[in-house]
Length: 386
Length: 87
Ligand SMILES: Cc1cc2nc3c(=O)[nH]c(=O)nc-3n(C[C@H](O)[C@H](O)[C@H](O)COP(=O)(O)OP(=O)(O)OC[C@H]3O[C@@H](n4cnc5c(N)ncnc54)[C@H](O)[C@@H]3O)c2cc1C
Image (cartoon, rainbow over all chains, first blue to last red; front, side, top):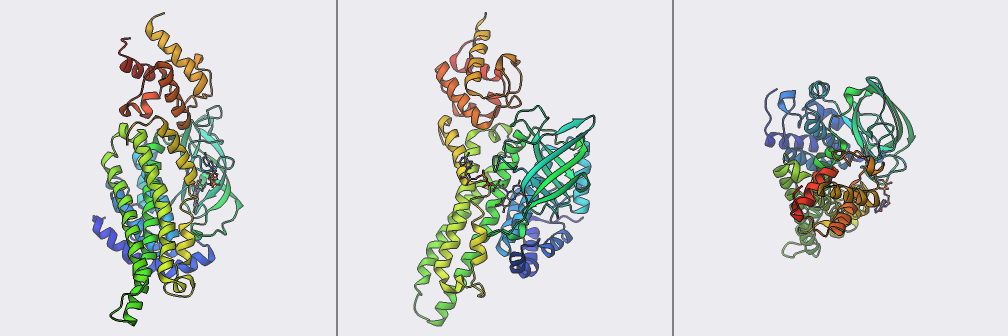
């Protein structure tokens, strides 16, 4: 494979976004179906293995480069951006925490070769978004294990080639003593327990399932989940989610801009009243962008510093990025609606913001902001400075 | 009993009262991983506060790490460093 630079990747994402993703976005939303054409195009250009290191046959791209792709895809279709982000979060966990294991080395090669799509089952019935607690457990029998999880949401569960699942280390392990296991499609059976006729993010197909699996103990990621979570899964999730939310917000503002330009052309020589509202929302967008980029830069700076990654200060700052970006996306889309007025409120107009608004409201629920702020509040009891 | 032993006992008392472990701290080896014994991130904050109170110390920012509270031995060496007691 020829090396693709970060800039090439961004250009290619822009092209796929404008040509393929945008064309399907409204139908994906209306029918709450998987954005199949987007993922066929992304696979054809090897986007699923873009972050897998080159030694395993992947593109070797950095997290910032992947974040740019999430933002670009998010502009055209938030569900496509979210699925891409969730897949890359799983990839990040594997490349950072499983590489010492021969099983996972082979899996990473296969992921790159076949452009496998990875799903995630962390949320569990009866626990909600408290991802550091599991009820279900890995039940070992010799070199095999069984696992049954009641998962209220596994986005694109039916379209995934493999799913990463959190569970207690063993039947007698404490609820916080978790591992993460990689299950290939033929290791598990999914029985649907709920549908996904949701307000927004409809194309993520986040159905509920009972997951029943049997697999080899080699498929348990060697490092404890607590460490994977604080060093990789939480920061990567917050940063990639925030990036695609930035994409939603950017496109909403772009529609506002287009509306104001059209107004200005109609009455040359005057500044339309909507331009002042636009100026306001552009300032908010720039602040959101700065928050996300600053977070990415911080994480990339300390990415290999285990001590810093497990500090309370780092956890607080990453949590804040999620809270701030999720609030900002809903506020910015709402403000953009104030710019476009009725033209954005209508579903059949080119300034329509209905899908953006509905998608944006998933952000604060996806690991509830209240939960994150409660965790921050506890950390602030012992944290000394910022 | 030596100082280190007394300190470990004091830490076990705090663990019993505040860490909400899945097992009794008396049955825990000094090196045992507290996170595997059921210490959650939330409970670890309560544990830090209770240790500060009992030993009249303040953990500085650089010690507020997962690793500093991962075992009785790790907690003991953090406290020894802050109180200037040699083990
Ligand atoms: C589009 C989308 C896709 C998703 N995809 C996946 C997926 O693929 N895999 C997966 O595993 N999960 C997925 N999730 C689930 C997600 O990660 C969260 O786990 C889930 O949104 C939380 O669900 P909840 O609101 O029912 O639960 P909870 O987290 O229990 O929150 C419910 C409410 O209770 C309150 N609350 C609960 N506990 C606390 C607390 N300790 N402190 C303060 N307030 C509290 C909060 O205010 C919250 O509003 C997805 C979610 C969305 C929106």
